[in-house]
Image (tube, one colour):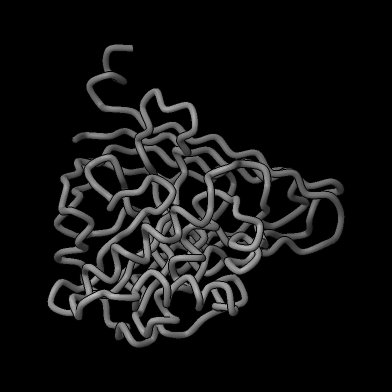
Length: 274
C-alpha cells in the first residue's frame, strides 16, 4: 500500500516566547515493512541543530527558534510504501537491548488491577510467547472500551483500566504495563494509520510492541484489535507516550500556549485523483 501523509502542528504563544527548542521524531522508521518514497519536515524560521539516530533506531532532529516567537509551524509531508508483516518489526536496526523495556514509568506502571488482568489473560496459556502476547492484547481491548474524550494526555494505564474507557494511548500504555507484569519487554510506538472512512479512526496513532523471542519486536494495536499491517506507518518508540512523542520541546518564557494539530493519511492513488 502506498500512503501519503500531511501532518501539521501549530504552536501559538501569548505573549511571545524568548526562544523555542524542539526535538522531532517525525521520520518513518527504516525496516522491511515500509519504504519512504519521499519525506519532508518543514519548520519555517527555525534552524536545524543535531540530527542523529538514537539507540532505538529512531531518527531524531532538533530545531531552534530565537524570539520573540509567536508561532511555530511544523509541517510534515511525505509518501511511504508499506507492506503487511503481521506486526513483526523485521530488519529494524537498534542497539538498545530488549530488557531495557522492562522498566515502567508512571504512565505504564502495573498496579494491582493491571497485574490481575495480566495474570487472568495468561491463565492456562502454554509457553508460546507469541500466544501470550496476543492474549494480553485481547484482554486490554476487552477491558478498555474505545471512547474518545474520557481520558487526557496524562492519564495512566492504571487509571484508564479503572475507568474502563480510553483511546489508543491508553490501550498502548495498558498493554505495556500488562506485558511487563508478565516479564515481557514492551514499548510504546507512535505513527500514522490510514483509517479510510472509519468514523472512529485516528490518523495520528499509537500502539505497543512486545518483544517475542525468535521473532523480535511484534506490534499489537488493542484499539483496533489487530497487529499493525499495511495501513500503518511507524515513526518511533519509547517507554511511554511522552518519551516516544513525535514532537518534544521547551519554550523559554511564560504565558498561554495553544496547540492545533491536523493529520491526514490517504492512499496515494486517491490523493493524485483529487
